[in-house]
Length: 338
Image (tube, rainbow, N blue to C red; front, side, top):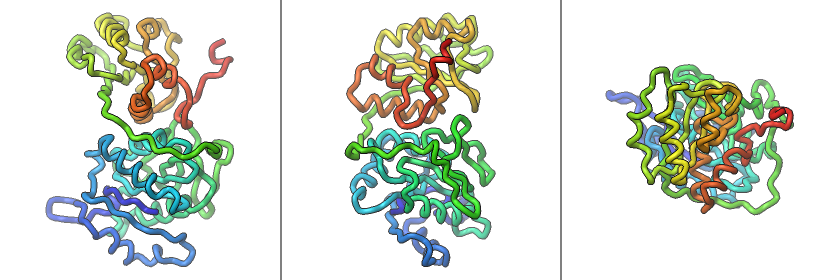
């Protein structure tokens, strides 16, 4: 089943720029011979109404995508979600948590150039995504783009103008597509035996605070209200903050005592947070900040949102944030702590 939510792949040119036009994507697909080729697995298309610009995605839309998959789960062997690239990594991460005990492939894809254009990358992205979704090789939420199959909650958008727009810097590709589709069986998630369940997200106030040289943390005190349930703190390197950040530590300590879950993630594209490696990161541990390991910011945000929807205590959520649920992080080994 192809779920067309919106995005560049289905847009048409207009005097105002590319715009989504209801009903046109089916016509464009029907005009391309490859989508009716005998070797392509059978597919059906469901188009969202209204079509979404991915910049407008919220947890409401994640719930809508998840419910669509859940309602049709027994009818199809796999699912392809066509989505705008701007927030595709967020949505793929969110659905990886929401679709509990998933035992079928859910493949997010899209394009940098609309399918109606001569040089579109959308045709091969969609053909390969359909082929992967019809196979039994992967049974998790993935993102396919430009010959690379990535774990959804490990992916991040790396380029706004290259065909190779996505990468998973801290995790190997699940497959690489060339003449053949070569799967990396050693890193694909194992088959789930428990019953599939769709977990709907509830509203949760989450903020992202990025540390930068010379930052005046007191200016951000207004966001630390009792309604704030989670904070992703994007630190330098392996979890470092300025040594003068006493006002930040005071804010974080108060917030943590009020039940806010604070997770440290690295600003570095590759690598992991390891609080306590450097002296300047030790105070974060002392005020209750959670070690985000090598999670992307996209995964950390959506994992927090998912856990807030699971009726857990703050302490339970803090514990779960440091443990691998869907392949979103690499748990440190005992040697790591030695």
